[in-house]
Amino acid sequence: MQLFLDTASITEIRTMWDIGILDGVTTNPTLVAKEGKTFKSVLREICELGVPSVSAEVVATDTDGMLREGRDLRAFHPSIYVKIPMTAAGLKATKILAGEGTRVNMTLVFSPNQALLAGKVGATYVSPFIGRLDDQGQEGLELVREIVTIYRNYHVATKVLVASVRHPMHVVDAAKIGADIATMPFAVMEKLVQHPLTDLGLARFLKDWEKVPKG
Ligand code: G3P
Image (tube, rainbow, N blue to C red; front, side, top):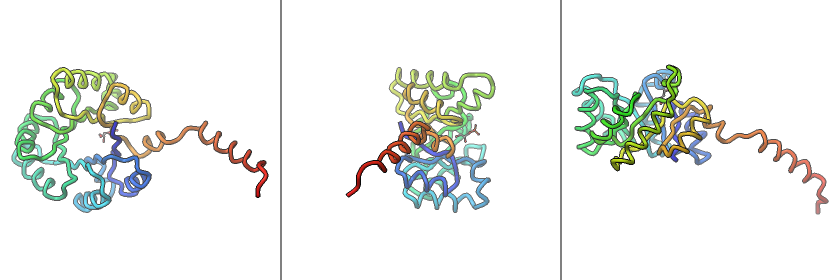
Protein backbone atom coordinates (compact mmCIF):
# COMPACT_ATOMS: atom_id res chain seq x y z
CA MET A 1 0.00 0.00 0.00
CA GLN A 2 1.24 3.46 -0.79
CA LEU A 3 1.55 5.94 2.06
CA PHE A 4 0.77 9.61 1.50
CA LEU A 5 0.99 12.56 3.87
CA ASP A 6 -2.12 14.70 4.17
CA THR A 7 -0.44 18.02 4.77
CA ALA A 8 0.87 21.16 3.10
CA SER A 9 3.75 21.53 5.58
CA ILE A 10 7.06 21.31 3.76
CA THR A 11 8.84 20.47 7.04
CA GLU A 12 6.60 17.47 7.63
CA ILE A 13 6.85 16.33 4.03
CA ARG A 14 10.65 16.68 3.95
CA THR A 15 10.98 14.63 7.16
CA MET A 16 9.10 11.63 5.77
CA TRP A 17 10.55 12.03 2.28
CA ASP A 18 14.08 11.91 3.72
CA ILE A 19 13.29 8.70 5.64
CA GLY A 20 12.13 7.22 2.33
CA ILE A 21 8.64 6.03 3.27
CA LEU A 22 6.61 8.68 1.48
CA ASP A 23 4.86 7.93 -1.83
CA GLY A 24 2.83 11.10 -2.21
CA VAL A 25 1.13 14.12 -0.68
CA THR A 26 -2.47 15.25 -0.57
CA THR A 27 -3.38 18.85 0.14
CA ASN A 28 -6.68 20.65 0.42
CA PRO A 29 -7.65 24.31 0.86
CA THR A 30 -7.82 23.91 4.66
CA LEU A 31 -4.30 22.48 4.85
CA VAL A 32 -2.87 25.12 2.49
CA ALA A 33 -4.49 27.92 4.52
CA LYS A 34 -2.57 26.77 7.63
CA GLU A 35 0.80 27.44 5.94
CA GLY A 36 0.39 31.21 5.39
CA LYS A 37 1.97 30.94 1.91
CA THR A 38 0.50 31.20 -1.58
CA PHE A 39 -0.98 28.02 -3.04
CA LYS A 40 1.55 27.92 -5.87
CA SER A 41 4.56 28.46 -3.63
CA VAL A 42 3.43 25.60 -1.37
CA LEU A 43 2.97 23.34 -4.41
CA ARG A 44 6.33 24.36 -5.89
CA GLU A 45 8.19 23.47 -2.69
CA ILE A 46 6.51 20.06 -2.45
CA CYS A 47 7.00 19.20 -6.12
CA GLU A 48 10.64 20.31 -6.09
CA LEU A 49 11.40 17.75 -3.37
CA GLY A 50 10.64 15.10 -5.99
CA VAL A 51 7.42 13.75 -4.47
CA PRO A 52 5.85 11.89 -7.43
CA SER A 53 2.18 12.41 -6.56
CA VAL A 54 0.93 15.74 -5.24
CA SER A 55 -2.81 16.31 -5.05
CA ALA A 56 -3.89 19.94 -5.43
CA GLU A 57 -7.53 20.92 -5.17
CA VAL A 58 -9.60 23.22 -7.33
CA VAL A 59 -11.85 25.71 -5.54
CA ALA A 60 -14.25 26.45 -8.40
CA THR A 61 -17.62 24.75 -8.06
CA ASP A 62 -18.74 25.00 -11.70
CA THR A 63 -17.40 22.76 -14.45
CA ASP A 64 -15.81 25.56 -16.49
CA GLY A 65 -14.02 26.93 -13.46
CA MET A 66 -12.84 23.45 -12.47
CA LEU A 67 -11.54 22.87 -15.99
CA ARG A 68 -9.70 26.20 -15.96
CA GLU A 69 -8.10 25.57 -12.58
CA GLY A 70 -7.45 21.89 -13.33
CA ARG A 71 -5.63 22.65 -16.58
CA ASP A 72 -3.61 25.35 -14.88
CA LEU A 73 -2.61 22.97 -12.06
CA ARG A 74 -1.73 20.22 -14.49
CA ALA A 75 0.52 22.59 -16.44
CA PHE A 76 2.16 23.76 -13.22
CA HIS A 77 4.09 20.52 -12.57
CA PRO A 78 4.04 16.93 -13.89
CA SER A 79 3.61 15.51 -10.37
CA ILE A 80 0.28 17.25 -9.83
CA TYR A 81 -2.94 15.27 -9.49
CA VAL A 82 -5.96 17.55 -9.73
CA LYS A 83 -8.35 17.16 -6.82
CA ILE A 84 -11.99 17.65 -7.80
CA PRO A 85 -14.98 17.42 -5.46
CA MET A 86 -17.62 14.75 -6.00
CA THR A 87 -20.46 16.80 -7.44
CA ALA A 88 -22.27 16.65 -10.77
CA ALA A 89 -20.08 19.53 -12.01
CA GLY A 90 -17.04 17.71 -10.66
CA LEU A 91 -17.92 14.47 -12.46
CA LYS A 92 -18.33 16.38 -15.71
CA ALA A 93 -15.01 18.17 -15.24
CA THR A 94 -13.28 14.91 -14.30
CA LYS A 95 -14.49 13.16 -17.42
CA ILE A 96 -13.13 15.96 -19.61
CA LEU A 97 -9.84 16.33 -17.73
CA ALA A 98 -9.26 12.56 -17.63
CA GLY A 99 -9.90 12.48 -21.39
CA GLU A 100 -7.13 15.05 -21.79
CA GLY A 101 -4.75 12.85 -19.80
CA THR A 102 -4.95 14.73 -16.50
CA ARG A 103 -4.86 12.56 -13.39
CA VAL A 104 -7.81 13.41 -11.17
CA ASN A 105 -8.31 12.66 -7.49
CA MET A 106 -12.06 12.74 -6.81
CA THR A 107 -12.47 13.95 -3.27
CA LEU A 108 -15.18 14.24 -0.61
CA VAL A 109 -16.52 10.78 -1.39
CA PHE A 110 -18.92 9.36 1.19
CA SER A 111 -20.86 6.60 -0.59
CA PRO A 112 -20.15 3.54 -2.75
CA ASN A 113 -22.29 4.96 -5.56
CA GLN A 114 -20.21 8.14 -5.62
CA ALA A 115 -17.11 5.94 -5.94
CA LEU A 116 -18.74 3.95 -8.73
CA LEU A 117 -19.31 7.22 -10.60
CA ALA A 118 -15.73 8.40 -10.00
CA GLY A 119 -14.55 5.19 -11.65
CA LYS A 120 -16.96 5.67 -14.53
CA VAL A 121 -15.61 9.12 -15.43
CA GLY A 122 -12.00 7.94 -15.29
CA ALA A 123 -10.70 9.38 -12.03
CA THR A 124 -7.21 8.12 -11.19
CA TYR A 125 -7.90 8.19 -7.44
CA VAL A 126 -11.10 8.11 -5.41
CA SER A 127 -10.88 9.54 -1.90
CA PRO A 128 -13.35 8.20 0.67
CA PHE A 129 -13.19 10.29 3.87
CA ILE A 130 -13.40 7.65 6.56
CA GLY A 131 -12.80 9.72 9.72
CA ARG A 132 -15.62 12.09 8.85
CA LEU A 133 -18.00 9.14 8.44
CA ASP A 134 -16.86 7.76 11.81
CA ASP A 135 -17.64 11.20 13.26
CA GLN A 136 -21.23 10.75 12.04
CA GLY A 137 -21.60 7.33 13.66
CA GLN A 138 -21.13 5.44 10.38
CA GLU A 139 -18.15 3.09 9.98
CA GLY A 140 -15.85 4.73 7.44
CA LEU A 141 -13.90 1.56 6.75
CA GLU A 142 -17.09 -0.20 5.64
CA LEU A 143 -17.22 2.29 2.77
CA VAL A 144 -13.66 1.34 1.81
CA ARG A 145 -14.64 -2.34 1.84
CA GLU A 146 -17.59 -1.63 -0.45
CA ILE A 147 -15.53 0.42 -2.89
CA VAL A 148 -12.76 -2.18 -3.10
CA THR A 149 -15.36 -4.91 -3.77
CA ILE A 150 -17.16 -2.88 -6.44
CA TYR A 151 -13.93 -1.92 -8.20
CA ARG A 152 -12.75 -5.55 -8.15
CA ASN A 153 -16.10 -6.76 -9.52
CA TYR A 154 -15.85 -4.45 -12.52
CA HIS A 155 -12.07 -4.20 -12.91
CA VAL A 156 -12.18 -0.45 -12.30
CA ALA A 157 -8.68 0.99 -12.63
CA THR A 158 -9.31 3.91 -10.24
CA LYS A 159 -7.15 3.59 -7.13
CA VAL A 160 -8.74 3.74 -3.70
CA LEU A 161 -7.07 6.49 -1.67
CA VAL A 162 -8.28 6.30 1.92
CA ALA A 163 -8.49 9.83 3.34
CA SER A 164 -9.51 11.50 6.59
CA VAL A 165 -7.37 8.92 8.39
CA ARG A 166 -7.20 9.68 12.09
CA HIS A 167 -5.12 6.92 13.71
CA PRO A 168 -2.84 3.94 12.93
CA MET A 169 -5.64 1.35 13.11
CA HIS A 170 -7.29 3.09 10.15
CA VAL A 171 -4.07 2.40 8.22
CA VAL A 172 -3.89 -1.26 9.32
CA ASP A 173 -7.52 -1.87 8.41
CA ALA A 174 -7.25 -0.07 5.07
CA ALA A 175 -4.24 -2.27 4.24
CA LYS A 176 -6.11 -5.45 5.27
CA ILE A 177 -9.04 -4.48 3.05
CA GLY A 178 -6.67 -3.94 0.15
CA ALA A 179 -6.94 -0.18 -0.40
CA ASP A 180 -4.26 1.16 -2.74
CA ILE A 181 -3.24 4.23 -0.74
CA ALA A 182 -3.77 5.78 2.69
CA THR A 183 -3.18 9.48 3.23
CA MET A 184 -2.65 10.59 6.80
CA PRO A 185 -1.51 13.46 8.99
CA PHE A 186 2.17 13.59 10.00
CA ALA A 187 1.34 12.55 13.58
CA VAL A 188 -0.27 9.33 12.34
CA MET A 189 2.65 8.46 10.03
CA GLU A 190 5.06 9.02 12.92
CA LYS A 191 3.11 6.47 14.94
CA LEU A 192 3.53 3.88 12.18
CA VAL A 193 7.28 4.00 12.84
CA GLN A 194 7.19 3.82 16.63
CA HIS A 195 6.58 0.99 19.08
CA PRO A 196 7.45 1.11 22.80
CA LEU A 197 8.83 -2.46 22.67
CA THR A 198 11.23 -1.40 19.90
CA ASP A 199 12.53 1.42 22.12
CA LEU A 200 12.74 -0.87 25.14
CA GLY A 201 14.46 -3.62 23.17
CA LEU A 202 16.98 -1.21 21.71
CA ALA A 203 17.77 0.27 25.13
CA ARG A 204 18.35 -3.24 26.51
CA PHE A 205 20.63 -4.25 23.62
CA LEU A 206 22.70 -1.10 24.05
CA LYS A 207 22.97 -1.62 27.82
CA ASP A 208 24.05 -5.25 27.35
CA TRP A 209 26.54 -4.22 24.71
CA GLU A 210 28.36 -2.24 27.39
CA LYS A 211 29.11 -5.57 29.16
CA VAL A 212 30.82 -7.01 26.06
CA PRO A 213 34.63 -6.80 26.46
CA LYS A 214 36.00 -4.27 23.99
CA GLY A 215 39.17 -4.49 22.02
O1 G3P B 1 -7.61 13.85 3.19
C1 G3P B 1 -8.76 14.45 3.67
C2 G3P B 1 -8.50 15.11 4.96
O2 G3P B 1 -7.73 16.25 4.79
C3 G3P B 1 -9.68 15.34 5.80
O3 G3P B 1 -9.29 14.96 7.05
O4 G3P B 1 -9.38 14.84 9.46
O5 G3P B 1 -10.27 16.88 8.26
O6 G3P B 1 -11.49 14.74 8.17
P1 G3P B 1 -10.17 15.39 8.30
